[in-house]
Length: 345
Ligand SMILES: NC(=O)c1ccc[n+]([C@@H]2O[C@H](COP(=O)([O-])OP(=O)(O)OC[C@H]3O[C@@H](n4cnc5c(N)ncnc54)[C@H](OP(=O)(O)O)[C@@H]3O)[C@@H](O)[C@H]2O)c1
Image (tube, rainbow, N blue to C red; front, top):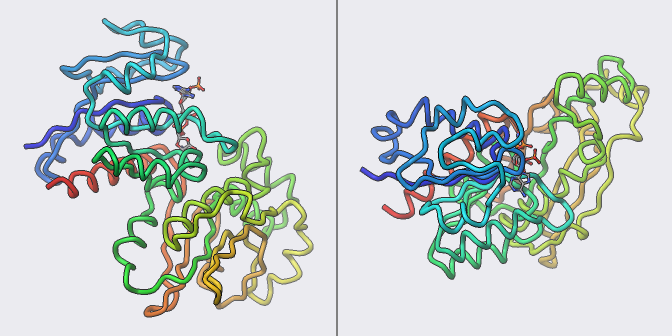
């Protein structure tokens, strides 16, 4: 029976969700998946850090109150986040990186990934920053060190997209994709179809916890742009940088614009897309698009995400599901660990 030692970097919604899944399902994973997980280290800017090579009690970690320096309450714990120690010296086989997304340079998460990969540890992450900004370099570093770098959750949380396209659509000739890749903006557009103004719909999204206090990254397309870079580089071998993707959002769309087309079945959606052109180059954009009633993404409402792959052999192949949620995204980390297990057995 395989037992992977895992260290969690960042202990907010996602990694706390993974610890909760370990509490609830580790025994079942032994029989269903052929491995179990043991947490040997955790670090978090807010909570502090703790390491124990013999294993930490996941239930204790999950139950810890979200108060500053809380890890100092545990024997051997500290109120300070010793990220480097936890990553390099916790004896973990796998580092689960789930700190905040920095859309400018991907740091410090990219450095956390480098430390882990250089130390010969597998990395699983849900953080778009390091992948959109340093993905090819980090994948190369993983290869050079004989370990895996997996990031399924970075695009659509637990809904399978990257591995599905890479594995199950390989050979089908993926020419491009179109996606609804931001639940907040799709929720806002859906509420505007019911007559709310843009500002009212954003306020509703904030009330429900879908939108941040500053919703700019969601409604102006910046979040989707990172996801388009990740998908295009992964599926179309594009080598795009963030600045290569033209980007606009939904803030200029009015309730009247939406109302005018509603009866025809057409709907406005924020679409992130990339396609291979005849000359081999890849064109990518994020923009509000008026989708006809026949479009595979037209029926995707509320906070749901979806991506439609344009393939040579199958035509459009569309996947939809949650694009956020702490347990949903923790599941993405599990799916990455399952992939690592499969690659090593
Ligand atoms: N939640 C989702 O639905 C979802 C879906 C897909 C992808 N993701 C991505 O997954 C990652 C984690 O998301 P989350 O929802 O768990 O976020 P979160 O609840 O904000 O947790 C992130 C944690 O990381 C800590 N942190 C920040 N910088 C750190 C550093 N330098 N060293 C150590 N810890 C640090 C934060 O501490 P402070 O609070 O003190 O900053 C916080 O406790 C993010 O990159 C997010 O974009 C999330």
